[in-house]
Amino acid sequence: MFATRLNDRDDRQSAEAALGPRYSGPERRARSHWLTSAFDEIDFGILLLSMGAEIRYTNRAAASALAGSHPLRVSDQRVAARDPRDAVRLTAALQEAGGRGFRKLLALGSGTAQATVAVIPLAHPQAMGEANVMLMLSRCGVATPLAAEAFARSYGLTSAETRVLLALCNGKVPQEIARDAEVEISTVRTQLGTIRQKTGAQSLRSLVAQVAALPPFMGILGPKPGKPPADEHSTPVGKLFSFKERDTMAFAPGNIN
Image (cartoon, rainbow, N blue to C red; front, side, top):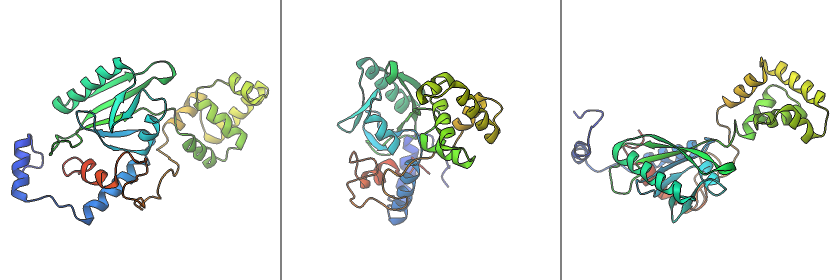
């Protein structure tokens, strides 16, 4: 009986040889689809890469972020840094994660385009080119607007109170909120007091903390959950990868149990 956790690639390959070829029937394909659908509901970017930065999987949030002003971008189905100085650090972090199992946080970009990326090693790849490094992108804010709006509805906030809550979660102070809404500061303070009363928050800080702790809540940007794309060469994140590639590469046996 083989150990549940094999310590090196030789042992893993010996075990696979003894067990015979990998099963890739409809059950595994269905499981892969449900996993990709679940990842698309997470409100921060997730990418699975090879050590050479080749993209094996990206969820919707990552595809959206990298298509914008994020310090990372997609080039020839690889992740690349926009700043040459970041490129050197990213390459080193991927090599250390994939080859030596090191985890690292990278602060990339500058100014308003600055972002933090976590580089996480995965299980050793079982075939050349499989994903063995995960990049996790930071959220763009305390919570997605949709999550904050759902929170507001659950506590019965008015539309005006919801706008104040969203502004507060975007880092604005009451004076800025009043100026942007063209109302008196006393109006905003009254609204904040009502919001605290309805949500049970003891302070503005605890109110923001409540919103920051919300679970992911994404809008429907792609196919409905549970239904694969109509075209096998399209995905919920565009045409970076085919649906077949996501099945066979991103979720190879051993990478995700």
